[in-house]
Amino acid sequence: MTYSRINTGIKLLEEGYNVHLYSYITERGVDVPDKYISGLSTNEQIKLTRLFFLMLEMGRIRNKEKFRDLKGSNGIFEFKSDSHRILCFILRGMSPKSFVLTHGFKKEKGKTPQKEIDKAEQIRKKIFELYDKTILRIYNEET
Image 1: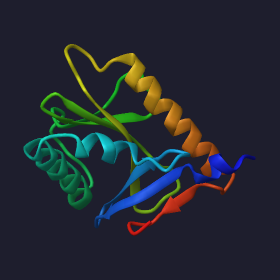
Image 2 (image 1 turned 90 degrees about the horizontal axis):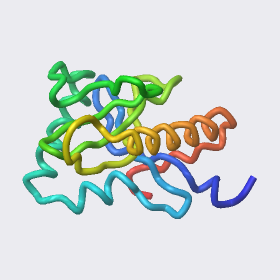
Image 3 (image 1 turned 120 degrees about the horizontal axis):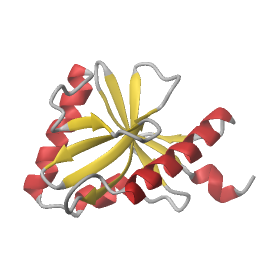
Image 4 (image 1 turned 90 degrees about the vertical axis):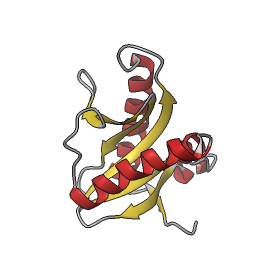
């Protein structure tokens, strides 16, 4: 076990009544989804934040144009705001339901690129390996 793997983890972003929302943190301490979202315009950030809060309070987003599971993926979902996508997965064994945001990207056209799905699946695999070994680091909001 290397020291850098122990730093890989998730950070609690928000606790809703029905859902908790976490963000993926790399072994170097980079909050990947936050880095993407903070680079967007204020208007784009507000649109994504509204989707997150809808999920937190309602436990789901019925509009498939705003949130959906990605067909052909291994449990990967996407929040959709205009051309921006934030991929995520459900962290099993957590109550309430907990989503981990993996990363964001700007979708140019067509379907969500397979390389982006693969990236989210690799992050999911890494997080579950650490979770199963009980060495997943869970950062709080102040960390």
